[in-house]
Image (cartoon, rainbow, N blue to C red; front, top):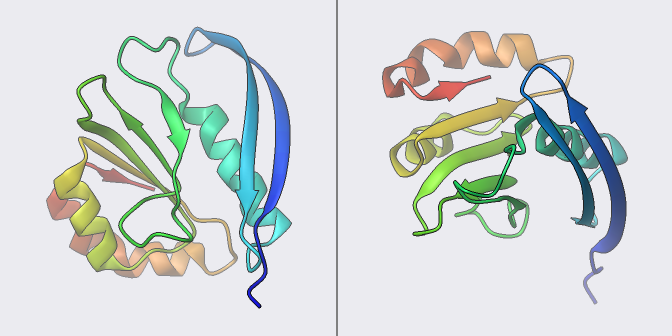
Length: 135
């Protein structure tokens, strides 16, 4: 029998003076059985660094990135369903980033392992053509 996700809850009080973003967020994160605590915390950090100041342009939500290959870790959609921001955690393949850049206005990658600088150095020139991918 396959293991189920562990449900984790987080209460985040955000006061980001630089972006003028303030708020309290009660979050529920599903931790995949193969996901480490470190990776889950990077997803939480990515949320806090990218949450919009208000919901006028849509909300930032946790997606099913580890379960569903067509979804990122987090995404922000506007009220019409248009994908504004696609956020990946880890070291995704070039093909995934290029596909994401065609679907979203902005793509962000949060790579956190010791090999991340070498991974990005080998990939950055190839995904730079998209123009909307940053790591």
